[in-house]
Image (cartoon, rainbow, N blue to C red; front, top):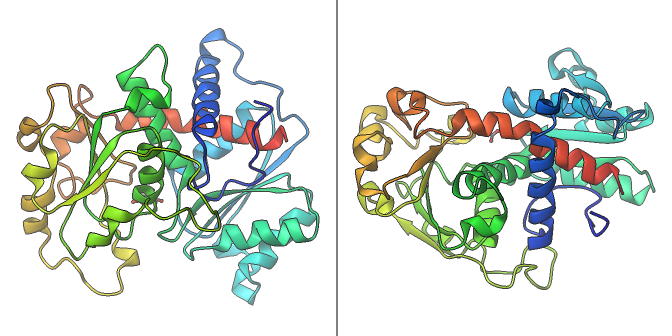
Length: 336
Ligand code: ASP
C-alpha cells in the first residue's frame, strides 16, 4: 500500500483505480480478522482519532469509532450541543482545538459543503500532520459511504475477490432524492470508475437533467480525470424503465432537512411513483439486490417487507462493511 497518496480523504473524484483497489483489498483482509479471534490489531496504537460530527449520525460515527478501536487507536468524540459552538466558536476553531490536543485523525461531518476541505487546507498550510477524513459534508461528498457501497456490491458480484472490476458492465440504478444526496455523488464517482453504468431515477425536482454529465468534466482542482474510461450515467423519470435490467438498486432517503422548499407535497404519491417494492423489482435482473445507506423511511423510499428481506436487501451487510472499509481508510491515511 506504499503508493497511497491521499493525506486527507475529502471526496472520491480524485481516486484512481489503484486507490479503490487498495481500499477494497484491505477491507477484505480486515473483514476476516474477527473470525481469527484476535479482535484488535495494534496498527494505530498510540494514535488519537477524533470524531467531529456537527450533524447527526448513527452509522458513520459509530462505525468509525469501532474501526479506530479495532485498530487500537484512542478515540475521542465531540458533542455539538454541549460544546463551545454555543458560545460562538467556529467549526474550524473547534477542529483546531482538537488538533492542539494531539489528534492524528479528525473525522468531520458538517452540513456545509467544504468544511472538511477548508480544515484540511488550513492544516496543510500550517504544516500540521493531522489527517482529515470527510464523514459527510452537506450535499457534496460522503467518501466512506461510497466506498462501502462499492465494496458491498463487489462482494455480492464476486464474493471470493471483491475488487472494483467485479462491477464492470453492471447496471446500477439509484432512485430518489439525488439532488440532495452526498451518497449519490460519491457513488457516482466510485461506480463509474469501476466501469458500472448508472441509471438515476427520480422526479425533476429531485434529479436535475445535468446529472447525466456529472463525471464528464475533470474533477474539481484537477486537469485530468484519474480514471481513463468511466461507466455511463443516464437519467430516467419512470421507475419501471429505470429498473429494467438492473443488477442492483440503491434507494435514497428524501433529505427534507436540505430542501429549501417543500419539493414533495404528497408522500403517498411519491411512494407510488418511486418507492421500491418486491413487485417493482420484477423488471430487474433475476438476482437483483437492493441497497440503502440509511436512515430508512420505511414505506416511503422502500417498502418495509423488502427492507427486511435479507435475500434481496444488502442493508445489514452495508452496515457491517462500513466497519472494515473505515478500518482500511484509517489504516491507509495514518500509514503515510
Ligand atoms: N446517512 C447518509 C448521509 O449522511 C444518508 C442519509 O442521511 O440519508 O448522507
